[in-house]
Length: 131
Image (cartoon, rainbow, N blue to C red; front, side, top):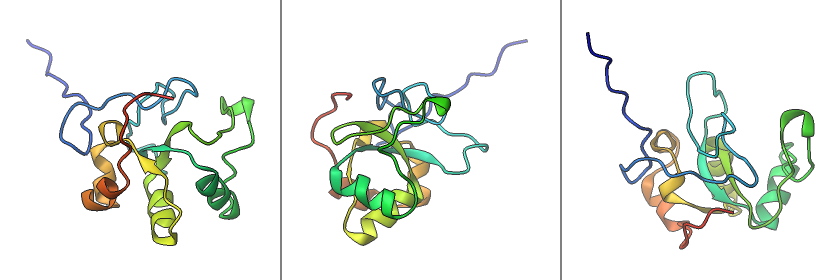
């Protein structure tokens, strides 16, 4: 009996998902990647580059991403950090004109269930260096 082959997670470009950030360590599974499963109710699949504007926007919406919470292995984010964002939060920021840049190679294909590829592509980060 052979073991079924498990396909790697795919990004919005249809390629294997590239890690988003190891410092700070991001991802629903805290493995550096924007992977997801059915337990990830926030759908943390968009690899975004934090900006002061987005961090202020998120805090104003009740999600303070700047304050560290060591009990959740959360270091607090600063501008320039890459982080796996909830797809709905990114869309909300996009609609409000506060969306951060996106690393397409590190953004899970499941993001396309919430936002369009064109929307993501307009905010594509030009570099793929991990923060």
